[in-house]
Each structure stands twice: as C-alpha cells, then as structure tokens.
Image (cartoon, one colour):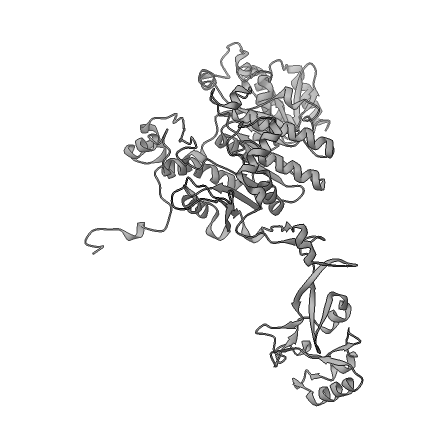
Length: 625
C-alpha cells in the first residue's frame, strides 16, 4: 500500500516539527547586529565598580549571542520563566524580519511559499510562533552551560508538552532530570474548567547528566527530631548490617560470614584467629563443626552470638571484619525482647547537617504565587507594580539544589529579578561568591498601569530597582556580599551608519570623520567605550574586565591580557615606533593588536603592518570594520 501511494517512509521519523523550526535554527547562527553599551555612570558607583554581577537590557537572543563569545561553557545554572503563551500573557512573535521572503528563501534553501509563511508568524501567538521564538534561545543557552550545568524552565499546560519535545531534542532525552509539578496555589484556581488548577511545571535538564551533581534541601525543624546526635554529629537508624541482596549467600561472600558477639549489650568481634578457622579458602569449605562448638562455648559465658541470616537463610554481613572493628561506633545495636539486630548509622549525605532529597512534587506554602506578589510589594513599597512575580523561596531552593558557592547563574527572562534576589540571599547566608547575569527586554509599560504612574517606564527598571533595594538590605546584614551589579544595554547600529561602514574605503584619501566612533555614543557612554566593551567580550575576556591604559608618545592604547586595542583617532608614526619598541623590549607583552581602521589614516596602518613584520616576536594585526 505504501509503495502504491509512493510514500517514502525513510523520510519519516520521531521528531518535533513546526513552521519556523528551520528559521529558528538559522536565526541562532546569525551574528547579532547590536553593540554592548556599558552604563559608565552606574558602573562607576561605589557599590558597582568591583561587582561581578551583570544586568543586560536588550533582546535576550542578542544577549545570548554576545554572552557566547566569553561565557560559553561557564554558566552552571540557568533559570528562565518565559512567556507561557496563554493568550492573555501578551506573547506574540515579534521578529523584525529584515529580509524579504525571496532573500529568506535563498539564504535558507527553502521555497518562497514556506519563507512567506514564516514571515507571517510575526505578530502571532500560536504554537509554531512560540516554538520558533523559544527554540533558538534554548539552543544557544545550552552552549553556555558548563558540562555539569543544569537548566530550570517554568511553564504551564499551554506549552509544556511542546517544551518537553523541544528540550528532548536540544539537550537529549538522556539529559532529562525531572518535570516538577510546582504547587503555586494549593486552594486551586476556581476559574479553570473542570478542575481547580493548583500548579504549573518546572522542567529540569542537564547539559550532561553523567557529570551533574545535585544537592539536597535542608529539613524542617520538626524533622530534625527524627535524628540523633553523637560526638560525630547527626545520625539516624539506617539499613541493617545483614546483606539481603542476591549476592548475599555465604558461599558467594565467605569473608563476610563470621560471628559477632554481644557482651553486656555491646558489639564485640571474636579474635581474628577464630575467624580464620571458620573457612578454608583452598578447599572452599566452611568449618561448621568448629563454629558450632565456638557458639556453645560463648553461650555458656552468657554471650550472645549473631550470625548473618535472612529469614533463616544464610546470608552475609554488609561490612568486613576490619571495617566493623574500626567503625563499631557507626553501628546501632537494637534489642527487641531477647532478639538483637544491628543497624548502620545513617549520616547526612552531603553536609554535616541533615538534609533530604527534594520530592518531584515541588511544594512549600512559601511557593505560592501570592507570596511572590507580596514579597515584591514589600520590597518596592507599592502594590500591583508587577504581575505574577516568581516567589523568592522557589528560586532560592532551585539554586540551593543546583549550584555551589562560586557558580554563575543566568536568567534571560529576568522580569522582576527574583533570580538575582535569591542568589544574593544565598551568598548572604554562607558568604558565597555566586554571580548572576540578568537579561531583560526593555518592554514598555502601559500608561494605565500602576508601575507607570509610579515612574517606571520599562520592565527592566522594576527588576533593577528590586536588586538595588535588596542589595542595600543585604549590605547591612552581610557587607561581604557582592550586592551591586554592572549595567549594559544592547543597541542596534543605525542603518545609515551601517551603510557608511559598508561603503568605507580604507585606502581612499578621504578625511576621517568623527561619526565612525561618535555613532556609538549613547547617553553618558562614549563611542569608544561601546566599541571597546563589545570587542573585549568578543575576544573572550568578558563584560566586566578593565583594560589598562598604556601611554606611547602622545597616544594611549588600551591593553588587556595579550591584546592591545587602538580605537580613537590621533595615533602618529612616533607612537607606532614607541609601541614596537615596547613590544621588542618586553615592556609590553602582547601578541594581538586590534585596530579600528575608521580612526587611523591608511599610511599609519601601512606603517604599522610593516613594523610588525620586523618584530622578533609574533604579533597579529586584526582590523575590525
């Protein structure tokens, strides 16, 4: 039947398909056309100047592309709370589609009709639009994670099935960790049809599950009563000392078959010579006659003899003779009527304090969505500033499970900045050095909203204000915590500037114009600072590094690590000669010189190239247009 209908089954397979999938992949491979603008005034403030936390204002797709230049494989944990595509959350796919269907068709190798349908996704909020929006972002985010990294994604029923398929495809089904029903409203939402909704979901995926380790959560005070305390710390009754596994019969583990004596309600071992007489390793025979006689002798002395049995079946001990001898204090002897049983002491597995493995149904009263709202209202001292912020306690527990004291956390749907709040609180409690990177689109707030009337114009302003207020409080409680943050904005280069850059001829004898640097000036940030910040990140040095000023004759260059940057106008032949001398004399240890040709006359560039060829060390000249 298949052959008659000319159906090619070889092309069919289990996969996630949606309109826009190939475009989303294509999009993730495109270079961003934005530049990184540091907020010099903000970043120079006392609380921010040495901070390693970052807040990026801009489209998160562009932000992820910039971050990959310097932070690939460096993010331990990602948490995101993306749009749920409920139909009322305001989500629409909003790509600017800077090319026509003809160009898109040519670039992607698809027919023009499909390209046209992809472009028509703009402004839509259907499943394909949401998946097209999310796929490229999750794909890029994966590459930012460390090999032992983990991502948490909040979602509800509208897209959770699609998100599962997408994450299985990007991370691999083998790296799925959990789908946590997360109880946000225990009373239930009475507006929902049929059932009063109590929860949403949290997906947890590892980059490589084999490398991932997760911590446990602290137990509640009442649960602490289940634990005992000795000189070594907390413990409770663990597994019995008798092995119950399929490999437990004494024939399979003869070295673990021996008597344990109970004298005056204490565990004592027989002399080692007695143990040696119980089993002959050459003949592989047990000396049961000797054992029986030994037991009778001990019983005459009022000593109880225990042997490893499971329901009258011969078994073996879990511990060796030597281990029991050395760690007798790690055993619990329990007596029930005239029968003795030995148990191991169970110690806390991950720290000195008792903890517990989180359950797959994630619930605490503090996780309620109402808690998230009241927390933010308390911090900002105003009601209804932000809709449905994630509760602080929920993210606090996620990070407690997922990250160590020096990890980096990324949230590229930052919203009200609950992630930053949770990271700072964790650091406050254990003097940790965790860092956060927040990314938020400067989404405009409508004039009829309370937030607008309170002076907030974009969503990122709300998040940044929360971080500042929480930081001030944390500073009072633990001044050792990094409570500041560096602020950056992503800006698109104006089209007329792009046209000038494309048309620029470095060999033409035209006069240099300031526009090539000044075009990148934004508010209090110079064009040079914008270019330098973007380049340092592009070269893998990150967003928060500080370059060193190196004086030549009359010109200063910026140096970081093994790279020197020449961006501004004014460098002369004398400066070039001085630069070569410093490199040759090892007064300047660099192997890359990155120049901005729009600022440097052609003859100076030519002179620089010739001088570099004469050096006794290898130095690469990089021209960035």
